[in-house]
Length: 479
Ligand SMILES: *[C@@H]1O[C@H](CO)[C@@H](O)[C@H](O)[C@H]1NC(C)=O
Ligand SMILES: *[C@@H]1O[C@H](CO)[C@@H](O)[C@H](O)[C@H]1NC(C)=O
Ligand SMILES: *[C@@H]1O[C@H](CO)[C@@H](O)[C@H](O)[C@H]1NC(C)=O
Ligand SMILES: *[C@H]1O[C@@H](CO)[C@@H](O)[C@@H](O)[C@H]1NC(C)=O
Image 1 (cartoon, helix red, strand yellow):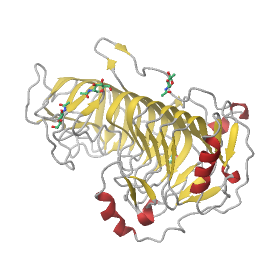
Image 2 (cartoon, helix red, strand yellow):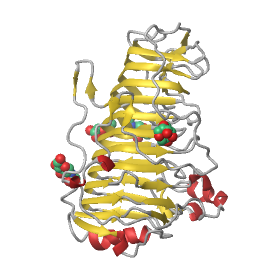
Image 3 (tube, helix red, strand yellow):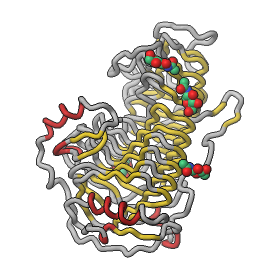
Image 4 (cartoon, helix red, strand yellow):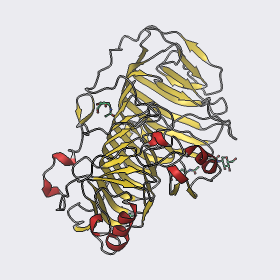
């Protein structure tokens, strides 16, 4: 149920051995300390323990942050509820210091068209509780970073949104790190979904039962490292549809476009449902127009671990579209096995090296080839991490908020950046730390009438502003 991974996927020419992972700096262009104009929500109508901190955040943004370059929007430590959706648009040279903890009773936050932006909690305890169990999979996401440039989001805890946690939509030069994401043990609970150019995601733990860190189209020069998928579905690319353009991978029925030049290295999986898995005939997707997304130049290096049942779901499967066979798939030091001690590997229309079922030569379509390997000699019992879960979190009850963010997300590798709570305060702007006065809030607020919500939200085009009634407020739907 665990996948620890450091992976690199990018415009990476591994055949020639020359690689540029990221194509430029990521993160805010100016320092935290230079954002010294403090815009405290408590000065803009907010109170600790507020039933709806949304309007105060918006007011602090509109009346302070956007009035003065070099501002920090400050949410002091404490508990807040939030009902009103907030879109913070077109800010530049600013930060959102979120030391407080917000419980969703409506929608959450979109940061849009920001440049030189940083969102963090200085105490490494800020974040969101979404009480998603009260309105499961009806649309609202916690946090969207839409078309932002030169930004970072870090040291936040995201717990149980109605659907998906963090969406990075396009933009460039972003960095996401030192995050704990904890969702329900069901589908529709994606950890981080990312599109755009030159983004870096590292040192993140995701507990859920869907995508861990997923690259969607369009995406170029994305580097993902040291990700701890704790009881998660794994890290995938996709779903990929029409006009896919990823210098990266994955599954699809039909569709068109390309995914190329990908390096996936240093994975450890332990008791995962899937292992090393390309599937362009994913069962839950409807066939799309087109010959299939063209996958090419994909290298898997240094993979170790096991799946739960390797006869049922092969630890290695390379199922390419017959209309777009995959050239240059290379497996090196891949030792994937099964907890049942027997497994099959499967290939279809895949060309390259490193696994018994793959073909060499000029790519053309071929039917599924199944081989029955013995245990790879290089396989070793996967390493554990302290605090691995034995079961996932339920979909129908409140999920506990973790009290700490780890300092290591991959066996033996320390996180690249020190947690904010362990740093000296000189790296931060000074701000009065308010005491939390309210008791922890949990699920008291929304009474549920959420069954009526689905119908309205499914008819809406992606990206259109819509209403979600009880479980929403106002916000965007999709991805
Ligand atoms: C982002 O930062 C780079 C410098 O690293 C700068 O050249 C670029 O103009 C910035 N992007 C925007 C949209 O301001
Ligand atoms: C894919 O994206 C790259 C980078 O943005 C762009 O140059 C290229 O034209 C795109 N390809 C297609 C087929 O849209
Ligand atoms: C993909 O298919 C769509 C719809 O048929 C078409 O408009 C588009 O030009 C195709 N794109 C590529 C990259 O082949
Ligand atoms: C995965 O690993 C741990 C680290 O927090 C455990 O404590 C366990 O709760 C689990 N994931 C989390 C933090 O959600």
